[in-house]
Length: 288
Image 1 (cartoon, rainbow, N blue to C red):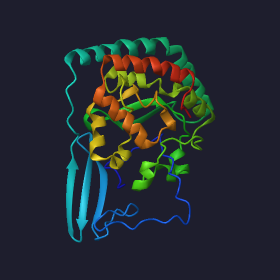
Image 2: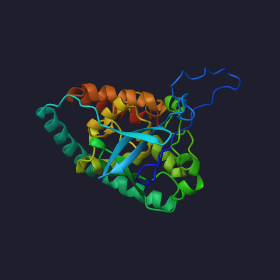
Image 3: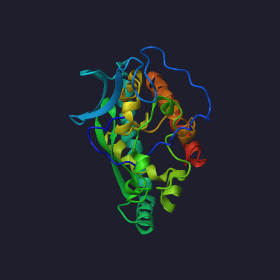
């Protein structure tokens, strides 16, 4: 993936796909078909995708280069059915009441966790990062820091976001044992307590209680055109993917769950996902 138009730090890095066993025969690309390892077709045409930040939004651009000629196409977010006014009003009211109540109820725990993280490792207990929200708009995402402050310098290979088509298909987005995580950070991730500050994003209106999880700008270049539909709604604190496997899902499986939710969301579905989230958090399903 070409570098995004802005440099954004991250607490999330993808686990590389397992390489094919040595000696496995691989078919040659058909005439004009893209080579998954190089992005170059058999006829010498280079194809690439990149995430571009412009006007506070992330855009997906695809380019085709044939010699000195390059054609760049900006991909629009696909249209979807309009949510009813009743649904939107109900969802926002639930967001405000639910996030405010949870922020008040968890305030003592938040204060204690802030202190524990501060003692455990150097750096601010609160991690801030630019994430992609509704309509591709960037917003500041808040969570408890789970990694060492110098994780990017110590493990630069985990921030490359450079995958070929085959790797994207088999990609797991979180490591079962991430060397960048602090001792307290690993516990926070297993218990999902690192996401408590997300409630502030919900209260502000950047996020909603139920929806696809917000994406890192660097990963947008690995989306198919139709998968941009994910950004037609607000990102959520929890979602269908989070109650259907969470981190044990591959990147493409997570996106499939996100798109299924976007296509059929309604108040009843949101309430069902919220109920299932309680069980998933308590049982630590798919969390690491």
